[in-house]
Image (tube, rainbow, N blue to C red):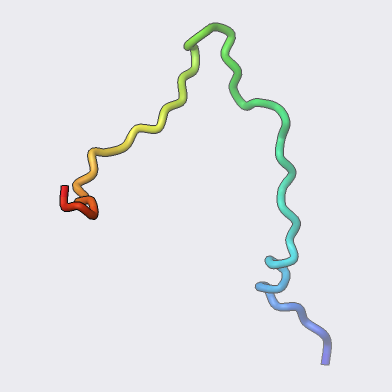
Length: 50
């Protein structure tokens, strides 16, 4: 009976990808590229009921 390695074992043994040291986008001027995380408002009550 031939030895077979399952797909899950192969995926678990994968090495991670190398991080790139180059920036994907670089601005030439101030405020040319702006990154922001915007979310909300949230309708969730706090532990105090507010």
